[in-house]
Image (cartoon, rainbow, N blue to C red):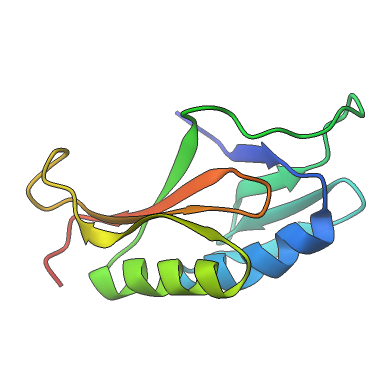
Length: 125
């Protein structure tokens, strides 16, 4: 079972300006911030952005992404809008992805560091 996920970032301030409003839409909040990381969750830490410990620049992985489960299609759309409004790039607008499942409704974004994130629901609402 996964405890948490972390992405690297080269600019914690820029990452926070993006992730604070985007993750708030899906019920996650900043739980800890220091000179090395930003840690988000909802009661427990689930997702973080970190400066690489080896001092090398952070780079986004090819093909890797994290999907956040949300309750409604409106939350998927709000996640996507918030991401675009706060420096993210579109990687797939809100919509049904029938190639995954007839009820798979998702949106995809690239964060300011190039990491790919997704909000997904199986709800018809």
